[in-house]
Length: 441
Image (cartoon, rainbow, N blue to C red; front, top):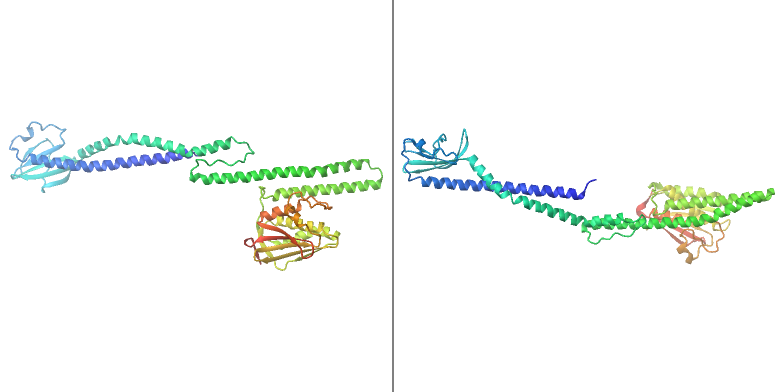
């Protein structure tokens, strides 16, 4: 696992070392330049100081002091006729320079810096090896390097302290999250958090909020499911017990039919519960969104409800002249439309009528389902999409989940469901899909 602290220390360490190296390089360059100026000045002053000297010795190479090899400079004096009358060091012969002033020559033993001055018809040359100059310049540069070492160490310590201070809020958040229980969704404190990390904390709190809603939804779902399943399971148990006590064939057949009816109701309730769990907006179940034809979903939903509608002589008409495409999950949309149609067929009188319309308006795609029933009172419409809620006085069988499932599917498709009085006299359910989510062929 990569450590952010170590990565930052490595980057800052490289930067500090690079700065130290750059400082040493610049110091070395400056020292060499200053050393050249200083030694050139010394050479000039030495030549001027020797102008009045007497150099008419015969054994010039045996003079005292000519064996001092630790003397950097080589002094030569040339007479008017070009004879060398003096040289300060033995075996360090340098040719006479044609030009006066400063020059640099290359010999077998390296590069030399030479200064020549003429006085009283004599030429005085003072020379110094360039290597000696570089050695002195490097020595000067190294003498300026030692303060860089403690300064670099202090910078490392300052960087380490700064990084720890910056990462302290992250460590606090990590410790706070590590000490929480699995069901805690309280927001993380953003006190002392840098601006660059505040977005991360904000998104983390948003995630915790969504997780809290999901946990509450699951808990509410489990509680509602347990409550709703208790009654049909108890009824099935009683029906099975009654079936065991029936003796005559006629009552036995009636008991079996009641038991089958109870099994069907329990099966439908379980099916509705599973569909609701899958379509809940807080669920992690993924829907396969792709380009689909809504007309096909409507036709499939009508086919699912048609046997029940025909048993009650209810007519279902659909006005869909233009095929409409949108991005969505075909199976979920089929379930939504089927539940709305089943609700309409179940709660209207026999030989009634259900009308389906599909059209475009300025707000987008409009899907309307209206019936000839008694409708729903206005004061009840605010709660009609709640789970397991049923309008008071309803004597039809049902789980109270059909409209809740339809609402959940609509939410996941970014559609809205509204209730209105139908032109047929009953209730009209209107589903509006956003204009950006659909297109007509």
